[in-house]
Length: 368
Ligand SMILES: [Zn+2]
Image 1 (tube, rainbow, N blue to C red):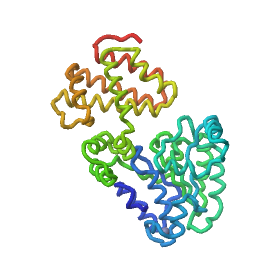
Image 2 (image 1 turned 45 degrees about the vertical axis):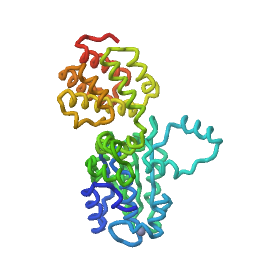
Image 3 (image 1 turned 90 degrees about the horizontal axis):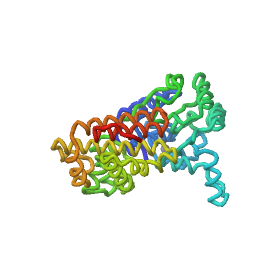
Image 4 (image 1 turned 90 degrees about the vertical axis):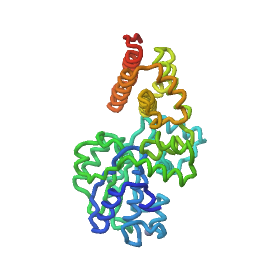
């Protein structure tokens, strides 16, 4: 793989190649932008290009250096990813019969698109060790590279340790921080980084990628529209992974429209019990997509809907609702999702959403 395999993001690629060409790689780079846009792969390609023996601005993908970066075994490459909470790691080790895990396995999973573990973090110990390692002269590459994935999940004390290194960076070292939530990083860390901002992919870019993977027909179009610029999400839609969730979202909407409190909580309780904010956010994002489609159908714009395969069901729902209420409900869902991103209590947000949604749909004040 090389930069060519990172879809789109031409500005970020050009910037990195200009840095490498001028031999002026910054000491700290922040790769940020929405989930599923190729940031993780890009960071690894950046490392490969910087270490490649061929000396160009892109990896040759054939030399021993490129191969070792790809195997996550290059001596000058240090990779950090968030780990699950200690209790979850112990349980996993017990389930697997106490076999020690290959330390590269979580990083590999991460590069394959596995989501960060809920409640996990990048520990202080790991960040301090990285700080120490980066202080040594590189073994063979022009510089040591420290890649920190989901940098927003750094333990606060660890982030402070990192800040100290960034204030006086070792001469032959560069840090690459990758995150979809740069606002959760310390402003002092942010101000030390050169920023590369990834954008959502265009529908034609996602469509071309999925077509190469053999996705076709209505499933392809559904994946492009529901993917909303995220390759991961589009691939999950194409693979049918979100089908069950979509069913639940449809039931959730019906429950909200019909003011069925018990059903509303039955659908949300498993998500709330797990405390997985990202899962709740994904659920509400999908609720937002449904509401947008209902709005389009109510305005005779059925050809623009994202959920192509559910058009008849949505149309039946749309005829029961007035347009103003749909708009209001969409605003309420957006607001709830925004609160979730700001760490407001999960139960509180969903209780408020229940009141707001049933109020929007029935025009009455709801009781929880
Ligand atoms: Zn190479």
